[in-house]
Amino acid sequence: MNMKIDRLIGILSILLQKEKTTAPELAEMFEVSRRTIHRDIEDLCMAGIPIRTEQGAGGGISIMEGYRMDRTILTSKELQMILAGLRSLDSVSGSRYYAQLMEKIQTGSSEFISGRDSILIDLSSWYRDTLSLKIETILNAIEDRHLVQFRYYSPSGESSRTAEPYYLVFHWSNWYLWGWCRDRRDYRLFKLNRMDSVSETEQEYVCQNAPMPDLSTEKIFPGGIRVKALFAPDMKWRLVEDFGPHCFTVADDGRLLFSADYTDLDNLVTWLMTFGPKAEVLEPVEAREIIRRTAEETLQRYKED
Image 1 (cartoon, rainbow, N blue to C red):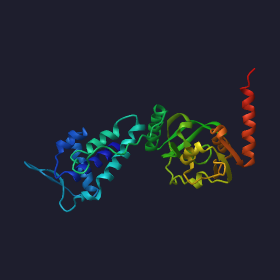
Image 2 (image 1 turned 45 degrees about the vertical axis):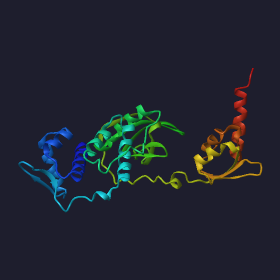
Image 3 (image 1 turned 120 degrees about the horizontal axis):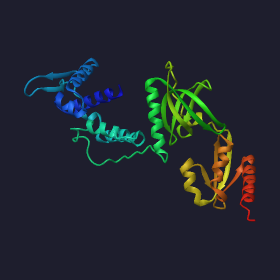
C-alpha cells in the first residue's frame, strides 16, 4: 500500500510539472505495467483530481486546464527543503528508496528545482546498522498493526517489554518509539538505542486513538532542582551548546556563573562530572557532596601502589 501511495504522489507531481505525459512513459518510470498506471489514474480521478486522457497521435494524460497548480506556490527554496527532508530518511532506511523516489518526482522539474543541494541532513549515528533494522521492524509492525517485543535497558534495570507501536519519533538527536506498553499499562517513549532484540510478533492489536507524545521540554524535563555552578572560561562553548548563550554571567574572578533548573540529580551529577576540575557546583549541596565522594573513591581506585 505504501508503494502505491508513493507512486500516486509521484504521478500527480509529474502531471503538475508537465503539460502532458503518456501511460507508457509513466509505466517505464515507475517500473509497473500500463494497466497499473491506468488503475492509478482512475484512483486519482476518484480522489477528485481532474485528469484528462486523450487517445491517438498527440494524445496523452494531463490535468484539465484551470486546475493546474500555480508553480509559484512552492518556491525553489521550499522544494529544496522538502527534498532534503525526504533524502534524510535514506540515512536510516538502509537503502536509497527515498532518493530514487525523488529522482522520479524531479523529472521535468529543472525549471524550478535548480542548483546544488544546500541542506544536508543525516539522521543516522554510530549505531546506524542496528538502527536501520529496528526502524524497519517497527515501521512494518505499525503498518501491520502487530505488537512488538524487545528487551529494554533503563536506569532502573532491564526488562522484557511488549508494546503497541504507534509512532517513530526523532527528537533530542535520538530515535524513540511511542506506544502503549502492555507491561506497564501506559503510553511510553522508548529510546531505540536502549532497545535490543526488537521483533514484530504475529499478534494483532486493535488500534487505539493514541494521543500524540508530548515532546515539550517542560513535560519531559519538568525541572525542580535549582543549580548554580562555576565553570572555567574555556568551557563557555559547552554551556552555549547545552543551554544557550544566556545561561551564565561572568563572575568577578572570570569564571562563568551558571544557573538553571534540572530535573534529575543523577543526570545533573553525570553532566557536571564530564567537566572534571573545570566545574565547581555550588548548589544543590547534595550534588556537591556526591561529586566530592565520587572523586575521592575514584582517586583511591587509581592510587598508585
